[in-house]
Each structure stands twice: as structure tokens, then as C-alpha cells.
Length: 256
Image 1 (cartoon, rainbow, N blue to C red):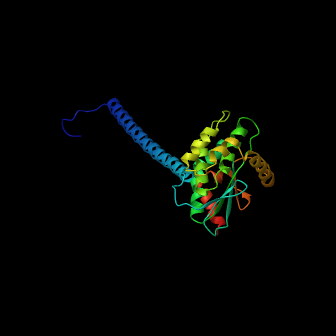
Image 2 (image 1 turned 180 degrees about the vertical axis):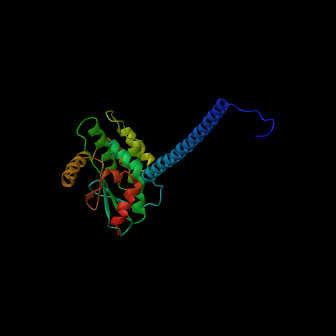
Image 3 (image 1 turned 120 degrees about the horizontal axis):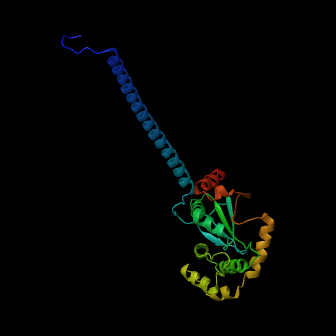
């Protein structure tokens, strides 16, 4: 002890030691809190990154494709339409759809461009099969009027443009829609040039034939729902059909 320093009593020394211990404990607590904050922040960043990665994967699987080229479309006598490059016969993608079906509308919105692109790239022969699956009104009559109108079009390019407009303008379930006036206007919008298109729509010239074909196709393909997408005769699961990337992968794998 230096000369002149005050002499601490035992009680004072004990108190000073306690204060130092308390200060050390408080400093340790601060360090612990800092470590926890850093740990929480790190965990949060990892969690956000994981969520972001999951969102990116889901978005990449469900994002619709951009429009590519076009493949020729040939309208068939039974009301179906084949979209394929010349000489392409396989793999075959069959799409069974009802123009009044909301799920069919969603399939067209999400995966419609993928079907078109695959055909344009020569990777598949895509066949559209308009059918009527509803038995209740006004759904059934709406569906029949729309499908009948497609049968009034012989030009493949015009048929496909009209097909897309039908889904774009699908009436809500339970309401009367696809009126003759609407169908005639959408025909003009699609560039339909058939001179008897308006009268064919109004008279529902092909309505009965369409219903008969719907039953025939439904029975032959054992259809339980629309849309039904088949790849070389085997139904593609909905989680694949509604995910453009998975749909493309399945079709291109079948083309090998």
C-alpha cells in the first residue's frame, strides 16, 4: 500500500468485492443478451431465406410460359382440334375440357401457353376435345352453345383464337352466358370468316352432335371430371397439369 492511501476496513473491502462481482455479472448478462440477439437475427435471416426459396420454387413451377411460335391447328369432324407440327405424331397430349368449367378455364390460364409451345416446338401432338360434362342448367346449355359455336369454324387458327376467347369470357356458374350475340361478337374478334357462322351459332346446328360425341368420348375415356389431360392415354395428375414446368418435363420426357 502506498504511503498516504486510506486504509480500508474489512467491511469496506467486502462491499467493494461484492460490487465488482455485481459489475462482472451485469457485464456477462449484457454479453449474453447480445449473443441471443445475434442468434435470433441469424435464425430470422435463415428462416426468411428458406421461405423465399420455397416461394421462388413454387412460383417457378406455376409461372405461365411466354408465348413462343405457333403450330398448325386442324379441326376434326368430331369437333376436336389437333395442334401439331407436320409429321409430329407423338407424344400425344389429349385435353378434355368443358368451356363452362371453371377448372378448365384455370388450366387454360396457367398451362395453355405450355401446350401451345410444346406443339410449336414439335415436342408433342396436342388434341383439344371440347365436351359437355354438366347436366344441370344453365351450365349445360351454356356449354353446348359454346361448343356448338366452335364446330361452326373450320379454319384452325381461327378455331384456336375463338377457343381462347371462350375461356377468357367464361360466364360465372349459375348465370346464363355464351349467348348467341356474345358468341357472334367473339367470332368477329377471333377473325372468323365462315360466312354461315352467325346462323350456325343461332340455330345450334351442331348441338345434338356435340352432346352425342360428349357421351361417346366420356364413356370411352372413362372421364370423371374436366379438365382431364392425358399423355399417351394416361391421365396426368392435376398437380402436374397445373404446373407448367412439371407439365413440360413430363411431356418432354415422354418424347425421348
